[in-house]
Image 1: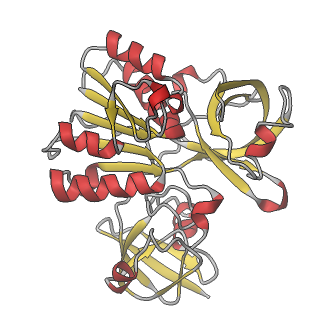
Image 2: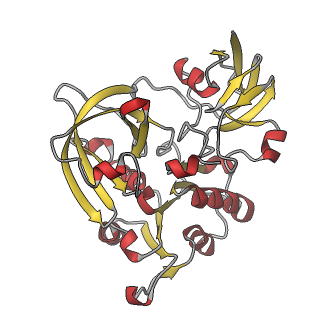
Length: 341
């Protein structure tokens, strides 16, 4: 059975089969709704069903609370229609310049950036090009239909190689390979570009960039894009880690702060030990932003990293710092552990 879905306020319509998700059907029809993980963990695709009913597949309870569901909110990445639907969602403009492709790629470099973070550089086929926006991600296509998502850590103008920052997750299906058996010249397959996390270049608002851990990867791409376009927008980068070693490209960030007008870098450590001899900011990274920016009403925020950080930042920035909810752009870095209810 096929149902009709109407998106408000745009008025766009698309058909959705009973056994497919609203997000999948929308993307298939060229209707671009916000999304991130596509597996019910990050909440980026959350919107409201104003007419009709859906049934949700497995998802993280944190991404859609019982109260939100009772108010008609839905995670479109795991919601399947049971009737015709009218949904409220912030539709993005489709752009044929960034087609999603499946392609092979060769590993050209594996470089440890820290004990548990690997830089992986990928070479595309000679006759292929991947057009993407800084901040987007690719999905590796693994055996048995499994996929693993990683953000591109370099801006598209510097895309001779695609670079990724991959954190070692002990027991992880893919990251164990990255840190043990994968080697240069190995061939992988991926699909991309994916995601609606990218720089909104039609705005001149000052920017807060917020990262935890390897959430720095897409943030790095955003900074490189800002540099490339000679943007004059003020930018403050807050990067949080448990220990100083987690800020694995701290030197690069310090160089940006020294060289770029209007750029500020604030590293924040949450669990500093005596041997770290840490002299900088401590605590939760999003709270450091709040301490420095009591009024975010005129800002855009781009946040990447652990779901708990992203969720806390959006909640507190909107409730306490007057940030407009539609000026918070995020990419939650979800692992398989985050998918367990």
